Amino acid sequence: VQLVESGGGLVQAGGSLTLSCAASGTIFSINAMGWYRQAPGKQRELVATITRGGRTNYADSVEGRCTISRDNAKNTVYLQMHSLKPDDTAVYYCYAQHSIMGSFSDKWGQGTQVTVSS
Image (cartoon, rainbow, N blue to C red; front, side, top):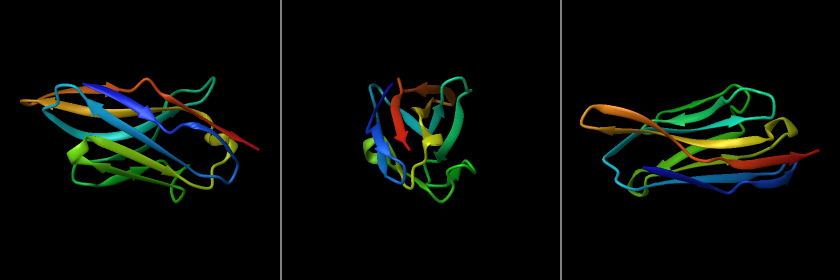
């Protein structure tokens, strides 16, 4: 299973971006999907996750400014980000939990850069 992100880029503070991540390959079942980010010199941190049934979870730092959604038929997850701040600058990584007959594995994308200028 491969995850490919798109939608990153440079945006001014206060602006918006939408990230997309599509899973491809031999897919049996994808459970949770989500987004994490890593800023320079910092550890990777949770941004948002969404279960297959649509239950969402957000980091406090993005609550109210981000919306995560998914299209199960397309094995795709989205992250809409609004009111972006310079502190949101990071590499954003897509995550998916793939399962095959009760065996689970974590899949990661290669990351997409989001830069918010002040």
